[in-house]
Length: 326
Image (tube, rainbow, N blue to C red):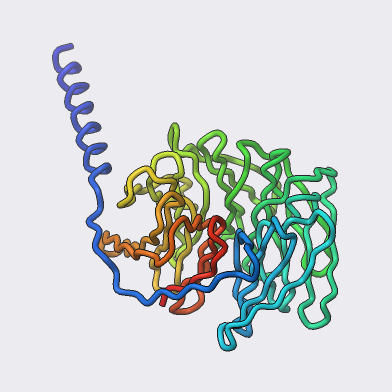
């Protein structure tokens, strides 16, 4: 009995030590980078952006119900008015160059043909008029996956036909990504979990991220690992999608300041922001090194980071600016 008590005490000490080690802050330094910003036409407050094959940057502007295109060469903007009430929240570009948006205001998925200016909308089958939130493309580029915070659903849309399929979910789905095995993962900030869908079977499972974590956005590195911002506790989590578990968690330099957008590049670097701070964090997991980039304007409100080769684009949902880090 005494031996069992000693074993339990030792196990408890080991657990406490492991937790203490996991909570140690990662060293942070300043990262040398050139940052340029442009004000959007009029006072527009953008939510997200995507890079087109020709290098153009498409920007979703919900409050003005517009889609913008920024030409980095001429540094000029072009805009399209979207159907009444569309209010685009997210934007992606498929392999054919079509621009897709979530109609967060009218329960649709939108499609713009930039060559002709033709715009189409596809309504979600549930009839939810305020739901589609964030988009992600499948690995083959043929299917759009999206979350619906209102109504607790996720969905897919065929990029050729626009046909939409919905799945019941939970936890106010927000950020979404597709792993290398084509499983769909999404953040459930409402109940501190990740959701996972196997499209081949329709089976949905979940991964607990810890009480109060409030996962917000998710991205995949070239090695297949998933990286998740934890809005509720100011951390960046690493998830192994094959093992289906959290394998590491890192505190961000700004503390609990609203960990929000996350993006990854071809070198396996993770880029993160905290929405309450005017900085972007560059994290090299191979060195466990975090580097901070101070941005030139205040009250930015970044909700999406977009990688384009050696450039990182961001949109200011609070201050109406477009920025690039080089």
